[in-house]
Each structure stands twice: as C-alpha cells, then as structure tokens.
Figure 1 (tube, rainbow, N blue to C red):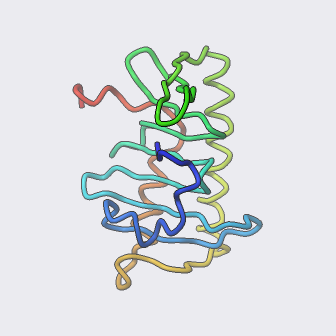
Figure 2: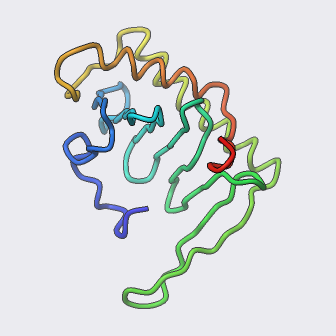
Figure 3: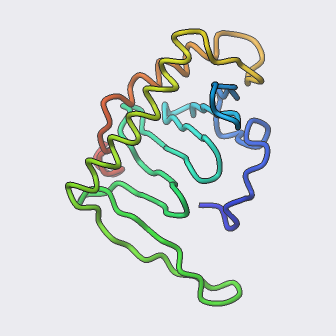
Length: 161
C-alpha cells in the first residue's frame, strides 16, 4: 500500500514490475484503467488509487485496495486491513476477517467490475492509450490473464503454491 494513497500518478511509466502493461480508456469510466502482468504470471487491475486488484498466476485474488482499505487473502479467508494513523510517521493496520456474507458481496462487486472490463475489451469498446512493450499484442495477453480471474476466488497461501 502506498504511503500516500494518492501517489499513483503515472502507473504505466512507473509500474516497471509489470513486463506487460496497458493503459486503457474504457467507457464510461472517466479515468484510464491499467492492466499489468508480471513475469511470474501475477496480474493486476488498477481503476484508480481507490480500486486495485492483484491476482496470482491462476487468477486467485491475492490483495485488493478499495476505498482506503487493504484486503489480503490468507489461510483464514480475506482480511480487511484499515490503516489507523497515530501521528506523524506512525500508523498501524487494524485487521478484520470478512464474514462469508461480506466475502460474497466483495466477490460480486469485483466480478461485476472485472466482467465489465472483459466485455468492453471483447467488444472492441476499450481503447489502448499506451502499452509496454510498445510492440506486440500486449492486450491479448492481458485479456487471457483477466479471463483467469473469473469467477472470483482467493489465492492460496504463498508458501503452498
């Protein structure tokens, strides 16, 4: 999680961990959406600083950032971590595990968002603003990674993959 959540200005230039990345205009979204793929197959989708999903190579949700909360998958399910600022330079993360009902709502919202992007890409409604590398069919590879994220599910613990 960024120290300052607004510090995510030019992800296409700064997100060098993604060997493939594309910034897309996806109507009716106002801000561009960034899709990124790491060399290990991990995939991420950034709508803005307040809506980010990170997936493992099989498409399982590893982490998410939504409306000021960090979500992390683990052995007990999905945990919400909320930053509690305790003065200048000091903060702590308060953890709460999502209930089955909360997880179902979370997954339904995430699925709707991911299906929307997948549909807009398939229908040719998304416009590539920038991509890295500049050559090749980066968007096709990113679409494959996006497809793996549906239906939503949690990633397994890192040590067990």
